[in-house]
Image (cartoon, rainbow, N blue to C red; front, side, top):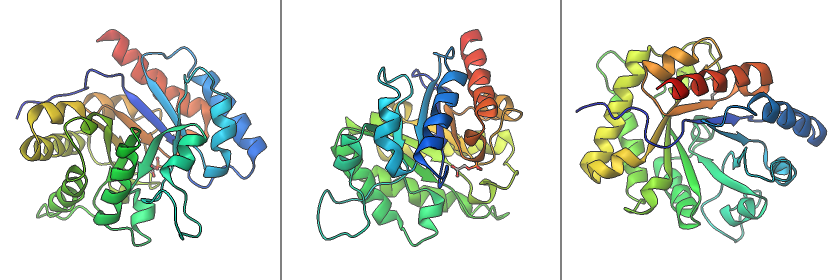
Length: 263
Ligand code: PGA
């Protein structure tokens, strides 16, 4: 199957702050530093995913929507006896436009494909963008990791319609690459991108496959961004550790801006 590299929409780079920073004051200051670092890079969509308590304040710091806000997770139900959970309507009312679901750090706590699909369904039903994380825990030589990713993708496709599919983003994040300083080769990433596209094309259709942005995540930094983006043929990145360092994060975005402007 031919490579459908770089979907017509702008490259997407999402800053996943995880359990950082420690206070609202620090979150505001980090957000402003990131906003400034990416200010001139308008050929790239930059999204920041802070912890829940900071959503509203950061959304107010981006009134033009130049740097949209994401929630790092959501619950599948809108209301109910679900102590500690946070719903899609709640994060939307705080200004979030993107919702990450199925991050491996959540899957490691028992979240299965069915729950990830239910969460994705809730996000798409609210007409928001779902960023669904998929990825293997280890790369076995016999290639079984492809079927792990396939099951994760198929579970989510089952809740997508022809219209909502354009609001689905898939982030390929091999668990072993997250926070480890290791990455797959760009060739490995490109092969997985093609595999995910093929899953979508076969289970929906080819035009649906073209609409889904496919990101890579796992130890992305300003040094490896160019190669992973160009040779990995992805549509952007989900960035953890480097997103807490505005200069490094700005460097990643600048790299994609340069490549997109040249092509
Ligand atoms: P990392 O995290 O960039 O620190 O590897 C990526 C992620 O968990 O989304």
